[in-house]
Length: 427
Ligand SMILES: Cc1ncc(COP(=O)(O)O)c(C=O)c1O
Image 1 (cartoon, protein in one colour):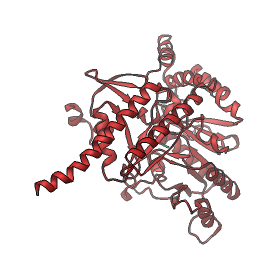
Image 2 (cartoon, helix red, strand yellow):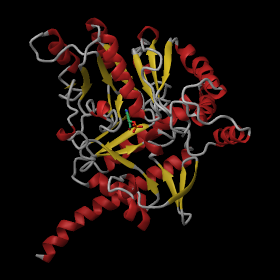
Image 3 (cartoon, rainbow, N blue to C red):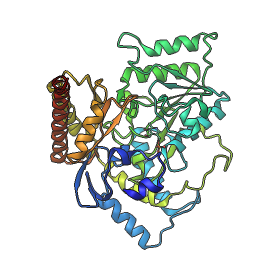
Image 4 (tube, rainbow, N blue to C red):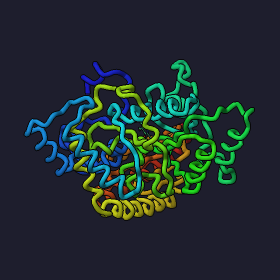
């Protein structure tokens, strides 16, 4: 680890949570430099929905490189990009009756969010955007302005402009309908909240602590946006690509957003991001929003192969089946450790186990790592253990990983019970 400490910026993060030097990976298993095996319940924060090094994707990439397929092309036309767009139209858009145009942005999620915000403001000629409490949309300046967590949004960055935050579904407790709350601000011209160009929303807040918006809340939000002439942007960067049981996470609510941001798993494991927009919103001048890495052809090749998972209902029904196993097992853990677990939340194959006992989720994730499971935390205070396995994980590995979390929880809880007794004995 010495070279990382000596040369890599202090900003490094996951290396601290998972202190191993990883070397190889396949499916839902990672291996460190000494060959130690880990089960991956993190999946690159939702990038590896199809697992590590899916053999068909890897082979497609090898074949492409071996035939000297073009790798870098800015946004010139390439066969790889053509094939991706055709596959995406035929497999994803057409069966869902979605008539979106596609804009390829720089390759990370935040690039797609920046593009959506810029386009919405340009089209609507309004500067304000409404986002929600606990939202996470990325860390470049525009995205940061619509990200809730104050750890990232330091005031000195000067990005707290042209955005207002409103309570997400459930934020004010089960009695308060937060769409009515939002409507009150929009109705009242003296509320101090300007009618925004857009509302940006995650249907399930991944980084914000696994909060699942209800179908009706999403439908009411869409209705409200239509009523006030506000564009609805669904940020599907983490929850899209099948994570919630359908390709787009908003399908369950039956809504049609004006714009959708996609990244992470869309590239089949390689960096890629794009913005989907209703046809009439495509009001850019040629070249008006540019960037050098908008033509990652290797990602197009991987993405086209990955979309074959959507040729039939196989993957989606597996997500529903394994998601039900996760829900059942996590509810069992919540019952077993009911004095420390405060909630189980999720849908499809994204689940959170919440504990308001300070530091407990961190201890559980650390102990799980020692036992061979890579798992992340989420939420404002890292108070949620976040389960995000590859959608392709086999049932045995899924159950093995969940059993290790059970064991880790048991040990952490027992250790915490022992500690006060030891302190008492020492006094
Ligand atoms: C919903 C959502 N939007 C945007 C982003 C930012 O993506 P990236 O980290 O690739 O910039 C993330 C990353 O976790 C995300 O979960």
